[in-house]
Image: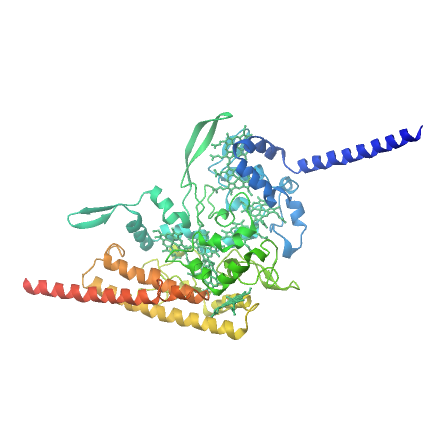
Length: 505
Ligand code: HEC
Ligand code: HEC
Ligand code: HEC
Ligand code: HEC
Ligand code: HEC
Ligand code: HEC
Ligand code: HEC
Ligand code: HEC
């Protein structure tokens, strides 16, 4: 054989080797996508390029559960210790989520040969993320639908906010709100009840197909009641189909729901020192690393750092464990309806009854419904967990003084609410207003805005270290006292008028 031939042959040999490996690895790559998911992709790449592209960018399309389970505890993202073999060695594709637990889902339908459902629920995610789903169920958020719609006092507020008003014989009434209105009002955040109202056939590019008819959907509220009976939607903080940790750590994610005058956490945060540092430095932070190293990955806390994240120091020592039970670090229930007190023991607030029989965690005179609240020892434990986060950047005197101010603010705003509520009770007792619905008269709205807006805003400002305006002139102390003055003037005028008209008779 001539020299040239030898060289040609070896080039050919090397070339075929390269081809072999290239071909083989692409087969391996493809093998990781299940056959079922490949079929979904064949159609859905054309129909929903947005969805398919987002999924391709996500970790779900890149790492199999088996690979993920090899990581050590601190770095691990799949918390389930056991995952069915059929799922372990394929990446998590369309079918691996939409085809889970078909028997439990009322929205399961036959789709091109597969039994799938639309609403992928916390119970489905729990197949691989068991801990997160379990912890989340101990969170008030998971129970937000029933906490609102199963509470007779809160429902009066829903009715007089969302119901269509009618005037009849000089009285103002509210019709029961429609489901469509509730779904885009209160339940946008608290979560709807998603129900299956049968199935319908639609004409598609691929011929006729049958789909479930869902009511209360779309919705990504935190306490959504799903067609498989599970509670919540993981998509409220990890939107589909990128399901990222980065998004959940970003304060903008929480701002979607925690912004209004009643729950101004985001507003307060955005004008606090922490929010300011975040805004200046966010592009330099590492949003994806797990665990999150304080100082190295981020230099000021976001909502997630204080309430949820797994935080370590540079030697890997754990400062805070990750939790999806967002009250693990909360000693208090700040949002007062109408008073603040220790955090409730159970997340299902609608199961609580005060002495007066109302589903509230305190009496109207401010006395806490003690049996339903966590003990001072448990409060202390939760406060210590929160303080440990602070202490990774602050001295103990800084942190202790901060919480002293918070306790003082809780005490003082409770006193203000008590003054307003005692006056309101007087107004009801003297029949100047009617207490059959607590929220349907202008004077009752004045009372409501004191505790629902102004003292809450004041307390949030105190708790989350900043946002001075929101504790003072921007729906804070100033408006709280001013509204109390208005209530008092109203009371004096109306009781005088009542006396005068009684004297005339
Ligand atoms: C033959 C093509 C085809 C295949 C294969 C296919 N789909 Fe679809 N799918 C469609 C069409 C068409 C729609 C309707 C799109 C619309 O209404 O906008 C749809 C809708 C859906 C919906 C939304 C249903 C609703 O009511 O909102 C989901 C979820 C879905 N498909 C998941 C899957 C999954 C998971 C697979 C693989 C197991 C899959 N599809 C396979 C064509 C297909
Ligand atoms: C990690 C689990 C997961 C994977 C993987 C996944 N989905 Fe989804 N999908 C969801 C969740 C959660 C929702 C939101 C449903 C809801 O409202 O609760 C959703 C919603 C949808 C919808 C309805 C969205 C809309 O806006 O109309 C379609 C269609 C859909 N998925 C198709 C797909 C396709 C196609 C793939 C594969 C490329 C896929 N999904 C992969 C979990 C998943
Ligand atoms: C069949 C198993 C499986 C299911 C079902 C599943 N996941 Fe995952 N998930 C994974 C794997 C594997 C990873 C990547 C782990 C890794 O990188 O180590 C992951 C990662 C994640 C991450 C971290 C992403 C990041 O940016 O770090 C989030 C958040 C997540 N999943 C949420 C969900 C949600 C929400 C659902 C349900 C809608 C869901 N997953 C369903 C297996 C699953
Ligand atoms: C933009 C999102 C959003 C909307 C819309 C919304 N809420 Fe809320 N609501 C929240 C958040 C967030 C909390 C919890 C705040 C906290 O824990 O401090 C909350 C808490 C509450 C609570 C206290 C529940 C408890 O645990 O005791 C009541 C009552 C309430 N909301 C009533 C309503 C009513 C009534 C409507 C509609 C008229 C409504 N909300 C609309 C976000 C919202
Ligand atoms: C889709 C709306 C929504 C989003 C997004 C959301 N929340 Fe909430 N959150 C709520 C509602 C509603 C409640 C009140 C539930 C109740 O009282 O029944 C709540 C309650 C809470 C509570 C009190 C929980 C408890 O058990 O005491 C904390 C803390 C909280 N949210 C923090 C956060 C953080 C941090 C984020 C972002 C990572 C976030 N939330 C994102 C709607 C939302
Ligand atoms: C109220 C917001 C919120 C909701 C709802 C929520 N998460 Fe998370 N999730 C977070 C935050 C914040 C983090 C980041 C924690 C950290 O930094 O350690 C996170 C992180 C994760 C991770 C990544 C863990 C890792 O090791 O990288 C997974 C997986 C996850 N969540 C799954 C879920 C599942 C499953 C659900 C539904 C049962 C869910 N989440 C609902 C806020 C939320
Ligand atoms: C510096 C840490 C820190 C940051 C950052 C932070 N919080 Fe808080 N948060 C707290 C503390 C402290 C409390 C009160 C603790 C207690 O109840 O013992 C609290 C309480 C809450 C509560 C419970 C209120 C209630 O009614 O019981 C919610 C909801 C909340 N924060 C949401 C958020 C959101 C949303 C963000 C981001 C926009 C955020 N927090 C940022 C420390 C923080
Ligand atoms: C990741 C680091 C980090 C964590 C964690 C952290 N902080 Fe801070 N905090 C800072 C930095 C940096 C400043 C800015 C100090 C300055 O400007 O001199 C700050 C400022 C503050 C301020 C503003 C003081 C003022 O008058 O301007 C308060 C209050 C505060 N932190 C309280 C807390 C509390 C309470 C916690 C825990 C619940 C906490 N911080 C957690 C880094 C952190």
